[in-house]
Image (cartoon, rainbow, N blue to C red; front, top):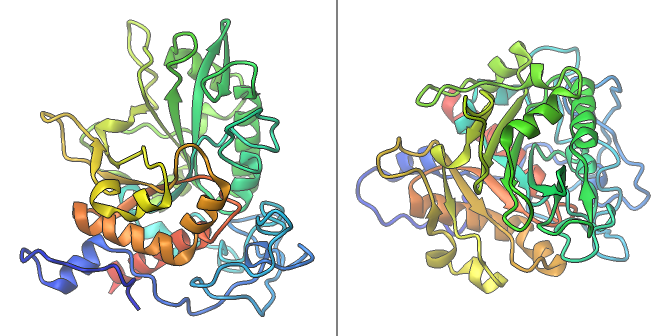
Length: 379
């Protein structure tokens, strides 16, 4: 069924065209899944490999559908085994063949037709010893394993040292070389996966120079070679193109920062040249459910710029709230929200920001929405 919040009031397009163009349809999946995201109690469930992994485990049965929250949480409410094994919904065909972000059907979609789960402030986790106000329970490497393909990172200048911190130095940090090395290791292990890195300049620390961050990338052998260069105004490549060309890292930046006199790194794309973003200052679930408020566009390309290629839907509350995230990341809440914001802005959502990724079913819902859209376009 189409999510219940799909209420179309415009007369510009027939309803069927509106649904096909703008709205993710969240029907029941044809094949239910198992794995840690399904709340398997012992954390040892199937390890069906997302992408072309070196470990081709076989999936089990007895999982649950996309509309059901995991039923066997850990004591603190998060999903048992989150980020330990690749979930079976990130599954490429057996025997090889072109595959993109865990599904062969994604390969036909352009980047601006995809939906990505974007881990908000992904460096800031309880597991990573961030002192307070952390947005995630587990570190970003586990989010990659769990199926998330967007990482948002705050860039800080702490006494001349570049860190990923949450606006305050020395109260929790990740270092670029480690993050880039681990991300590259993941991509080398899973040669079908494309990752989006979204860097946000911290306004509370020293000045951010984007070329300096690019230099940190150069310190990791092979990282820069895998980054994609986009031409402003050009058509975005298909996921299949990126996989075949091995250009599987897409870089965006925003919130200030400067570049050298001869320009920014060619692989760095200013996010709001391409994206329209919904409200990012929701204080409660009630604010998120107030679609007139929370789906309104707050940041977008300049008036003399090109129309946005991407719609960003923020699905978190400030300050971070683990209990609220468990609800926001549930199937019904998220499906209704993506549907409402897509309808309101007449764009198909491309990025959904979330906190506490280890709660809920966001990664699976994103995967299923992409598969379904690819099937719609292929008809």
